[in-house]
Image (tube, rainbow, N blue to C red; front, side):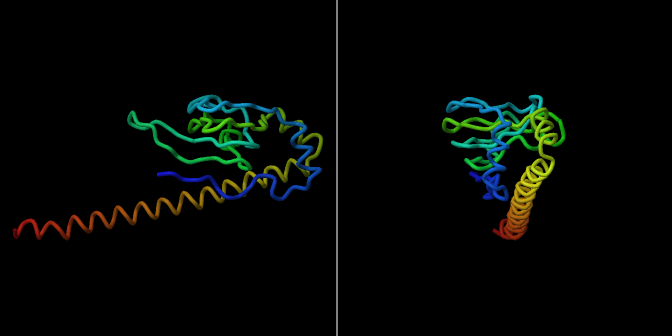
Length: 165
């Protein structure tokens, strides 16, 4: 199943000068096609604003690679670990060459010290994207449960037919 990332664009509520200020604090990271930006289980050391390119988010379950989504330019990745300081919950691999802006906790602290209002806006941007992704996940869970119920119902309906044939 191919799932695109949320349609919200990071920096959506920021003014041009505020975007420039955030960029001035960030580290530019270049990730070449098929290279991992980070791996599930890695220490979370920041989040990434994708400036150019596309990333595939995936995990391994029961020996199989499971695609969780695609992150496009204008969105973010790694925000969960940035917020809770836990290990990465999934891996991110470049589908194309990717240019991203990395905001580590140290960089974010410097941004807070320089411009607390802007730091709050950045956190609100993260919150908005996470809320949209949670809504998408909820919808997928409901869709999955509906299909599961339909399959169970179909099996029950077919059972009497098999017994009579």
